[in-house]
Image: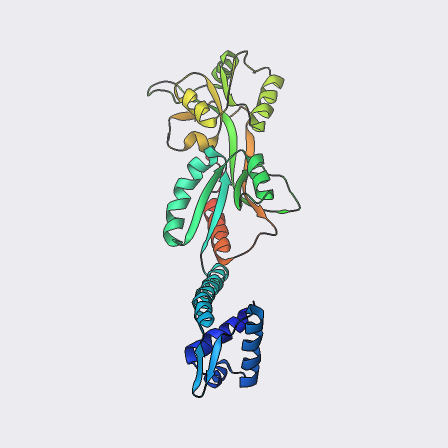
Length: 302
């Protein structure tokens, strides 16, 4: 069924006159008459009774008018929704990141963003950085906060801020001396060394410790950075943590074991597909993430 013909029919039924409907549509009356006849032929029915003063709907015409009103209303709503997505800050997006990264990034970002963009819906997707990258490529995630991402021809990568994976211990009590380099080496050798097993940075730092003959005999691999943080805060041993993860929510309670020890530099980027649909809302979200992320600057010294 031709949507244009349906609109012609609807206006003719409203005007109850072919000539009046033709004038409002800006077409000739013969053109309108041909369109109505084609619609009647398609449906196998007569839609109007022609009278001296105009036209009147038949019973089948009245049924079609009810449906035509619903159809044109749906089409108008669909057109408006599409226009809103293209020209207004309306949309729904999935933001992916590692839980530990999100724990210090999102509390500062989301309240202000959602307040200033109330018609943008933001959903969260958690996983490792490689998993987030894969989800972006699969179009399950729209934007990702990714650590140490690699270039990919289908991705846009915008550097945001820096961090570093380092060695941490519970902060000394008041009056206790600062940890010397010799004491730091001793603590490492004694262990346990607590780390998130899934992090590539952890393996690289353990390799460096081994090369410097500082690798402890006792290891405690964990599946989660928050558990590493909790155990380190409890004084169990030396924890390997990103500096920002160590700092958030526990200011001053964790300290770098010693600045002379090796650390692994991290670069956090905003990642999204190069062929993603660039609506006004998508641009607003991307710009807000970049602005907030770049405002974080370099990693904390802890």
